[in-house]
Amino acid sequence: MPNVNPNPSDRKMKMPILVVGVVVLVAGVGTWGYLYSMNIHHTIQLGGLGLAVLGAIIAVGGAMMKTVSVGGTTGTGQFACAKCGSKFGSESALNQHTKDKHGM
Ligand SMILES: [Zn+2]
Image (cartoon, rainbow, N blue to C red):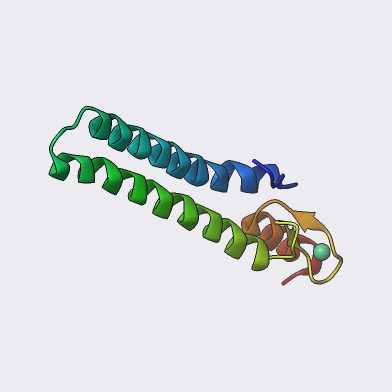
């Protein structure tokens, strides 16, 4: 993957969607190519092509979710405290910190 996300938790959450999409896409193209080479009925070939399209949609969806996630936070994929700037890996950790340290 060309993009290396600095936040391990974000990578763990988002990468599988992209990987699954690419795997389904490759499997679909492979299935379609195999059926095409075997000269199997056109309708069945479309099934393989449909699988490839589904994989592409999943891959694009996973990539878009990743982009939205990064854009919706501080830009590093982390949750930063608005009071003192401390960074946390999850929103619940930030909320706990805010409650404990700043009484909010
Ligand atoms: Zn703080």
